[in-house]
Amino acid sequence: MLNKGIDKLGDWNPQLLRELKGRLKGRNIAIALIISLVGQFLLFFSWSGDRPHVPHVPSHADIHYPDIHYPVDELDMQLLWQDYYRDIFISLSLFVLFALLVIGSYMLIANLGHEERRGTLNFIRLSPQSTSQFWLGKLLGVPILLYLAIAITLPFHLWSGLSGKIPLAEIISFWVILIASSGFLFSAALLFGLFGSWFSGFQSWLGSGAVFTFLVMANVKPINNSSFDWLSLFSPSVLFPYLVDETNSHYTGFPFHLGKIQAWQFFNLPLGMMGFSIVVLTLLNYGLWTYWIGQAFNRQFRNPGTTLLSKRQSYLFTACWITFTLGFALQEPTSGYSYPFPDNFYIVLGFNLVLVLGLIAVLSPQRQALQDWARYRHQNRSTVNSSLIADLLWGEKSPAFFAIAMNCMIVALPLLGWIWLASVDIDMKQQVFASLILSLSMMLIYSAIAQLMLLMKTPKRGIWATGIVVAVIVLPPTLLSVLSIVPGQNWGGLWLFTAFPWDYVMRHASVGLVLQTFLIQVIILGGLNWQLRRQLRLAGESATKALLAGRSPLFN
Image 1 (cartoon, helix red, strand yellow):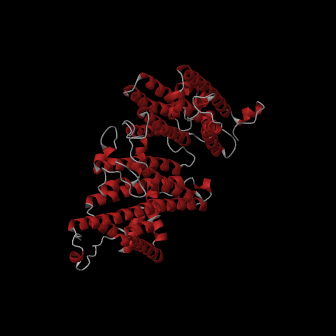
Image 2 (image 1 turned 180 degrees about the vertical axis):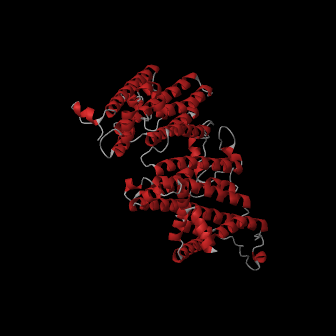
Image 3 (image 1 turned 45 degrees about the horizontal axis):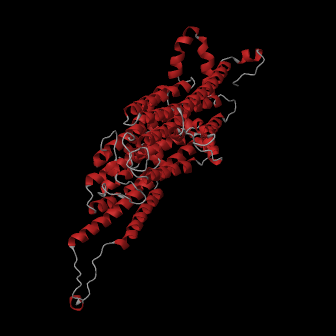
């Protein structure tokens, strides 16, 4: 019977069977169980000193101290015990959350890097199993011992929660969110693991460290009705205030500080008023971004030389991104902002800078793809002119600049609507509009620089492109700060040529200066695109034609 079950499992998912056979050994299972049980015992023992106790009543106390009474309120004791079990429940939840997500991410990244170094990953790519089978087999099989250790905590977790008067439905909702979180982060870990050779074995520590840092940062800030509130949807601990019924107070359960979560809104809807709405939106958020990670993983796994997303996919991805960043920013911030509308708007621009930098990385074709596009698209002369724009916007091998420009337009349209409808004076609308235009033009400049770097002959062109773009973004504001060149002083206008021109535009820039800056940016962008077009034209030449013209071919 067991062999039949194993055979059926192998028929359903060969990769899962391979992972389970390598890990489910008696010794490994025993170690996982012992670690889990010892951890639970230590956790329970650490709370034993805080157990509520009935105060000792001295004999004849009423005779010697007639004005002092030692009443024991049964209701108060019940509440103390309830809080005690809730604290144990939250502590165990934190332990499970970090152990599962951080250690699980480490295991998956390390495993995929090991497969890559051994060369077995290429054999798996050639096997008849689908990418989804490989993905699911890794997700379920690699951390199987970790899953077993976590499963052993379920009785203790359930008992402490029910003893703390936490409804069973809310306990189940936490586990549902935790499973969805695991699917998202583990899928991201697998995608990151495909690039393991870049980090020479260090990638597992880097990835798991990033997960740990993100989980803490996603919850260390209070809810304040800005785009940063989106980050809280990526951690299961967002449900803790509802589990312990502290949504109307400044929830400060260590190590988190969510504040008054009831003020949380999404497109002006009262998201934080009910735990059910948090669960629904969190699951939707995890499901959406897990889907996009799956799309990128599928493309990269089968064809490592392709871009992570197609240009067509990127437009829908950007629409999803701007929906979430804008949805949490439309409300007036609860605290900490001098100018609520522009400050919230600039946070959205910061998120979109991250988006555009990510799009540069996932949409820019490699050198060989650009060479093929530049050389062979000219063979069909009848469709060259008619299909050029469409090819630049939709083609798999065409340069990414026009696609990134289209994504910037997708970002700009809803933001322009927000500016138009905002209840602020016309001067502030003009300042915010100027910030939007200058920021988007700088993002396009970064895109053009990256594409030029990817046309280099050096085998490390990807690292060069990343380094140059990061330097262009980071060095100018850093140098201006070191030289004490601040907005409002001499040479302060140089801040308009950085990725963060917002403060200068808001406080000091005139209309004429903004127009001059934009004109200079357009000239720079035009020069970069002229150089990009020239390089692509040379790339389109055959090697023989280049040699006859007395030049070495651009591509070897």
